[in-house]
Amino acid sequence: MKTVEQEQVASAELGLPPGVQAALGELVNAAKDGLLALSVGVGLGVLSTLMEEEVDEVVGPKGRQDRDRRAVRHGHTGGEVTLGGRRVGVTRPRVRSVDGEEVELETYAHFADRDPLTRVVLEQMLAGVSTRRFERTREPVGEDVLAAERSASKSAVSRAFVARTGEHLKALMARSLADTRLAALMLDGIDLKGRCCVVALGVSTDGVKVPLGLWDGSTENKTITVALLTDLVQRGLDVDQGVLMVLDGGKALRAAVNEVFGDVPVQRCVRHKERNVLDHLPERDRPAVKHKLRSAWAQDDHRLALNALQQLAGELDHHHPGAAASLREGLEETLTLTRLGIIGNLRTTLQSTNAIESMISILRRTSRNVKRWQNGDMCLRWTAAGMLEAEQQFRKIIGYSDLAKLALAVERELAARRSPTTTTTPKQDATLVNA
Image 1 (cartoon, helix red, strand yellow):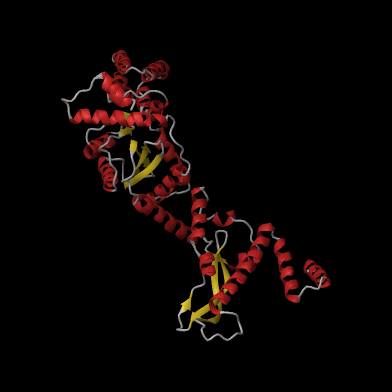
Image 2: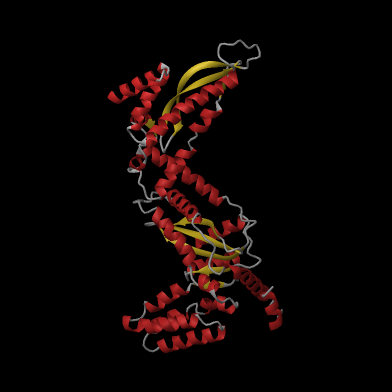
């Protein structure tokens, strides 16, 4: 009060009107809560002025008769605007047409929009803020505003998040893929404490990573993977021109790809294959076998790489038959990129499922506060929100400049498989690859 009185005395000495003096006193009080609280106090005052000015534009100046008037003032009523992740009560003017219908004020409609509120809630929740702690994450905006705020409780925040993630799920699953030209497509499953979502990530011919879709089920099985791939096709995804499938080696994923896409080139993840083989070995033998595996996969000549892996499997047969069997299972598909003539950074990038696993790691981080997955809808909403969050962080894949060469090589191989009698000379192959 002492500060207010001093400010009012100073204002009076300047000859300011009493109304202005009172407003300055309120701003001084707001300043005690910080600069943001002061700005909020000023902003709410400006909002009130803007609404009154819009009323003058719609109705006409107050106190003047106008026979052509199409609307009239209808007093004031309570309203709410979105401010810093909360709903704040304001007093807004009302306007009615001469026919008695309510006229919406554009200024109020803009600031009353709930979308900024749900956007703040979504960003906070995906950043790891729980519904219980949401209220503590917001900036101070003044005691008067805090006393009148709404939509900051745990249940209100939860409802806003459910609504927003539901919109994201619909947007992701409704994306048209008709204009998406893929060079590679990756599939993987994410376990959600008793439930499973299979997700699909595409790599366009420009090197851009594109979240394509997801499907919910109890496990990473063939049925839900077929449903996911079928949905992608129905949304316009064209794989007839040739797409390289990159899989971790799961039999269910491989069977689903065969059923929906047919006989397409598949690159098995070498990191998964390496892990599977080494798990069959004692610790003392792992470094040497790991070195031989990586040396073989680094070969640019397909024949030499295949011979090296087959020789290693033969060496493992006697003392570690389980490791040998694991290596032989799907061995040739670990060299698909080498067989297609892809070398360098692009082969290193697409030899593994690191790209989709990176996206899944973001999904896990955004949903780390979820303790219990209630139903499939919840799994899909959180996963879709995490995929779109990951999309904002995506960069072009390393080696993207060679993706056109990959697309041509896959297309050439598919054409050869469909027409076994058609052969090309090495010179023709080089022309197609370098086109």
